[in-house]
Amino acid sequence: MSSGAHTTVLDLNFPVLPAAGNLKVTTPIDGSEIASVQMHTSEEVEQILQRSQSAFEQWRQVPGPIRGELVRRFGNKLREEKESLAQLVTLECGKIIEEGRGEVQEMIDICDFAVGVSRQLYGLTIASERPQHVMHENWHPLGPVGVISAFNFPVAVWAWNAALAWVCGDSVVWKPSEKTPLTALACQRLFEETAADFEHAPDGLSQIVIGNAEQGAQIVEDRRIRLLSATGSCRMGGIVGPQVAKRFGKCLLELGGNNAVIVTPSADLDVALPSIVFGAVGTAGQRCTSTRRVLVHRSLHDEVFNRIKSAFESITPSRIGSPLEASTLVGPLIDEEAWDNMQAAIERIRPEAEEIVGGGRVDRDGCYAEPCLVKLSSQPEALQQETFAPLTYVIPYDTLEEALEIHNAVPQGLSSAIMTTDVREAEFFKQNSDCGIANVNIGTSGAEIGGAFGGEKETGGGRESGSDAWKAYMRRQTSTTYYGSDKPALAQGISFDA
Image 1 (cartoon, rainbow, N blue to C red):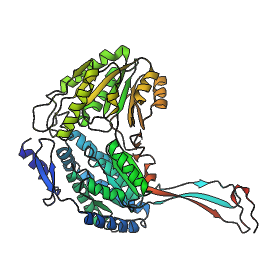
Image 2: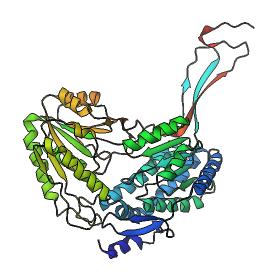
Image 3: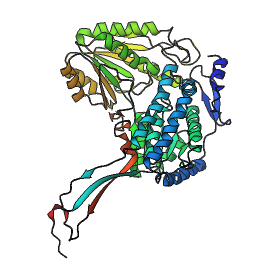
Image 4: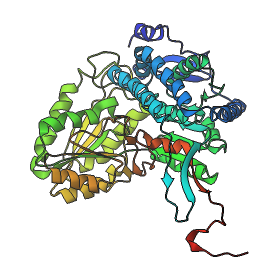
């Protein structure tokens, strides 16, 4: 991409660039450096954590609906800057501009959702076994929340956490990926502008830590961070989870996915194929919900493989290029390491493959890869590992029971889908998929904020965004009150005369 395209984005009256620093920021569009930012020292991180604790002490006293008003105003600020922020997302992480707009819309949507939650932070009235006793379940603000986000969704995942944390009465410390700090700084600036006009917002309610694993570890290990929400690889979760548990903190992990679509004989392929293709190549295959495996009934194995192959070939190379161009469907991989990992995965599977289509490099500045499709006769051990790239495997099965066995035989459990017009197949699939997400006649990729998002097994078990995910950001309290005047009864009918 030309330097002129960079200027188009960065001259949008949208203050994002801080002073030059020791962390270089490049764009995957052509690999060029677009900024440098200063990483925080350990002393500065400590100051940030102190401010966050102080902000929590003040913010928790503000009524929930008033906290929601701040989030409502922030959502409106995002609406005003949607296009500018979307272009910055695309510039910094490489997803196509339409997906960049969709990511900012997710931020707006979760703000709307959180505003409603701010008036519904309620518990239960529970029947007591004892006369003249009443039991209540109460929810109280938890404390400072740490958010560690990944490059592929540089702003939406933070917003999922932050909007709910704020309405629940918590402060937020955000460490974005070192690959995408500019979008984080832009969001922080927008929040600060919003909070400046809101008299109830304390200083330090939202803060950013710029850095790498060293700064991340300082947040993970700090006892003041009552909830640590971390998005990244299964390997990262295996490090972070035990560290937080060691200090008896709460952890919300959103880790890897190895997602599959099951195509049954009754499937409407005109419905199935677009969802499969988007799931496979959207964000250049760099979503945790990307479609990695397509499990196809043996009677359709060749047909489905050939139709996906035709779709991939129609994308290559004319629809692969700058994600700022409206005609582009597949943008770049984030960096050379991602390209190397993709090639290594292709070489590992080559001895097992019946056919491999695509997977080559597109001749452009930056790391642009042809989507790769691999035809297999079974699911080999190599598929236990997720590859963050547009690399998709097509595998046959004979019975739906066998398909679910193949489907569940990986360590990750995030997103799954079945393509069927048989309600019995759909219900059997939902009962037996071991994933946190189980879709019918839509793909694995792309979730609305109204439902709780997350997965099982090595995906980490965390839930973010909709439904009752807000409860993770609060502490539960059970309260029993006796309102009689005689000696109160003991639970379980215990007699204790003193």
